[in-house]
Amino acid sequence: MLDSPTSEPESTFVCDCDERVRSACAGEPFYGEHEGKRYCVLHFPGEEKSADFEKAIQRKLENKDFNFRGVWFPDDVSFATFRIETRADFSRAYFAGRADFVAAEFNEEAIFVSARFAQQTFFLAPRSETQRILNTLFLTKSILALSLFVAMPTSRSALLRSSQFSC
Ligand SMILES: [Zn+2]
Image (cartoon, rainbow, N blue to C red; front, top):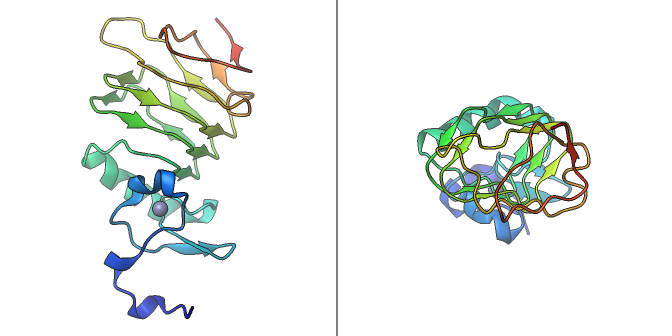
């Protein structure tokens, strides 16, 4: 198939990310090619996308869109003290830098199934009724090997494996 990005309308672009995570990048244009696959800026795996990625993330946050399925985070990321009123989905997301969720308030489901954290990750357990982590799942063995939980999440349905706790 011929590849002619200049003549391709953005609306017809379909990201080559796993179809299970494709809902996260609906409407995103083509960004770059990696190992023969064509990705949007959210799913493109590479640290060089940093500045463009930041803009795309800001757009998502302004739209209160917390669907980050499969998103490849190139830098340190902080959702510390964020108040998130909608479902937050980080399934299959990859965090190349440190991820900070200290005192983030998840008022709906917070999902981290098969998310991968390359660096230290910080979560702080809910300390008041307004700070809740519901139905949070930490499933993949490799996810949390380097993770540091400042305090133990108290959600009944949280499953934690291979994790370190400093509490
Ligand atoms: Zn994508």
